[in-house]
Length: 168
Length: 252
Image (cartoon, rainbow over all chains, first blue to last red; front, side, top):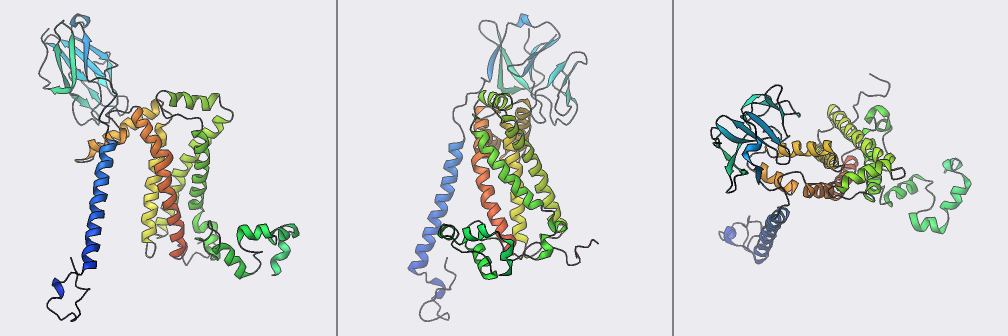
């Protein structure tokens, strides 16, 4: 508000000095506030404009084919989806192939029984747990289910507890 | 004055013509006064000093790395605009255009490599400039503000380098931007949103390519041009280069 520089005609000793706001001061402050609101508003609108509402990205839910395609005790890399479908005695689970470090796509190395990241050398077990490397977290597990016609279906938006497996 | 013998008579006559005077607003710059007026009256020179101390022109005063950075920026602007005549920022056309520039377009490989190498040299020159200014104490009063402008220009240079790195749309570009934008998402609270808006999506795709192209070709160069103008102007307003007093040019 008024800082008292605009004084009333009686001079700075006048007790009303702190209370008086001239019309000019009031309008200046109102205009500055309006500009501030408009500036913040335009930033919010621009942020909204720059955040796309429709994305033409690969679907996050996909069919992974008939369960019989996967041999028992196997790790299968689905390149298109960047997901490993792992079949163990306990059943099926889906592990993300995207490294939790900086987003490179890992590779399954059957000769070592490990999932390895080419970018910075992180290594994981087929169940996603970390062996070594800069990766901060294990590879997440995605929800896996059976469709009505018997195909495996993976939902990459839904991560699940690593203990879960789809009984074969 | 006595200097006129260094100018060829033809140039001298040219400078006396009405056309020359209408363009440069001055006749021949033969006196200190007319030389000063020639600098004051030129849009591209008016923020430069009329006179420079001899010691700040010595190679060891600056190694000219600031000027070299600016020259490289000019080279990058010219070659970049020429590359834009062939390049489409679209998937997968961007990669094909880059390949065409290398193998099909006349002198395309020359321009592309000039752009790439000048960009890498510019990062080097800007860093060298920064270290040189830092070790000379060029950040001290009254140069603090210009030091900050310089730091922002360093960041703009790095962002220009980074956004340009995606444009060839090859494996190197794709994974560099994937990794780099994942580093952005490590920012607390707003990281994932900043990454989403920078890429225009959740992964490096056609939106990201177009956004990086616009940043690389329009937004960042405009910021750089404005800041470079402020930077040059402030060098003179703050009293010129920081040259150590003990540096007499004869070596230490």
